[in-house]
Image (cartoon, rainbow, N blue to C red; front, side, top):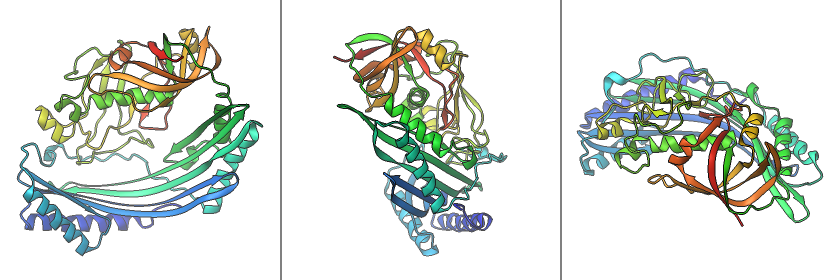
Length: 447
């Protein structure tokens, strides 16, 4: 079983170490300090062509220390949690702080913002999984994929991963919080060939709860079906057409929004959505919510990486930007208050518009269904967007044939305003949960 033994004892040990470090930091002249500890254990298995390529048990631990001398900041980290190593690491952080320039915006998050009511998020579900069982799951997934179609000629492998971890964050405000979580995943990737056409595709599932994972057989079958359907892809002539992003890619559009609304982008004025709060950026049917306290979800957390209490927030309402993603530092730079976003966002939920995937194809009529994106082609300052892509050409609401070796381009501002529908086929595997997204038009560059 992949689990942390004696979690209560480990939490108590981390708490005692944190108190020692914070007391020592004050004795060395630090006006404020914060410390984080983490420890985890995991199992990773990878098989390929019926052979075990990797079987790895891993354990990790670490500590990160930040001290403030007024507005001077020093940071150091270590993987050694012995008393002497922590003292040496603290000394290093203090030396760094004394030699760095003052920054008036440095410091802990405000004390009154620290989390006091810690909800139960139900994130810890260890997996009673032996190495032999993990290997069998991976082999089953790969065998299912390879046996699905004679055109499956090779495999990139199938994998099983399981991890359990505990973390503690404490600071000199007197805040201390402990969190435990697990993460588990199954994946499979295969290669298909038909004549001179060769394609690779994959599928996976992930969850903090092993019982919620899709079966090894279904992961293999999905990987095989996705791979075979891409064979004998065609090119397209350059044109401007409607485009659908499937859910696992649509979340990337939400990610672009989050990046544009992040505190760092805002105070550096390096975003195409500068000072966007209150602006109509999307059609009025677009609603995006942050929900950090959902049980058993990847983006759930009671407090951010500065100890600030997280809360439900509306990011987009009726197409208008409501708020940013700010840490205490970026908030001070902007003359605002932290949004509890240090370390990233919580769960982001994009409301659907009641349209199924099949109906969305019909609504599009003729256009491009995008199932793969290649490269990183977005300009965060201008919003200009260009990515290599592959997918399927659609006519009269029906998929006609696979397409490859094309580029799709647009501008994110225009793309956001051009959203026509958001599907009910919501992908819940990550911290961004959304369905397929239909855009009114993008430029497809091909032959």
